Image (cartoon, rainbow, N blue to C red; front, side, top):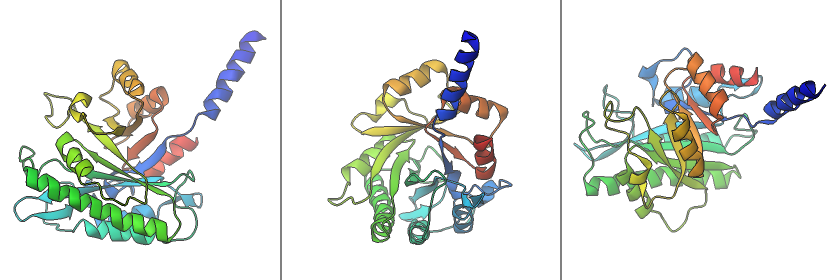
Length: 276
């Protein structure tokens, strides 16, 4: 009898666990996945319109800003592959229009999360880093995006939050330094972990984010061990799993570590799995 009660208590505890928020990766989480459509206005609009059982499929969306060093232009882009030259102001306008809609904007009912990733390089080569002046200009662009979205959230009485995130600590420091006097919408800062060094030089350890009030850390679910996760918990940050494609290992990691958010390119697949 005692064993049955223990099992029942564990089952009830599992049911009471909050589900992670589902964030749309690169503004493109319409299936089947097509990375060529990442950070395009068409995919952004289609992703925002996704529904599951008559409710919004997602709880937030990630967009990228890229500072193109050759001509000093702030783009809505993941990188410089291809010939697209969409200005960063354009997805901000799309999101502002989305915030003007009536009815719920998220599956969970929580505030809409806009994750704004500032890319850490300024040319096709990832080794082409920002100069101090380029960092300041990129930070100003990020705050311009924030302002358009924040104005729409306030005007339409919608709850939203923006997370400034980057692989590059110096880029985030520039955003902190450029903080405007008025910030009517909640915002926070996030570090991003990818494949660890030396396999990929982009990832920086958390101690290199000194001076940045981090409250979010995004990690790839397949490059995380127990000790690292315990370290994130002790840092008192919200943990976000990001991925390119969900796998059995992805779902196992979500069950094991229970992240606060999941950034995915497969919104409906992730939502169906979470709801099962």
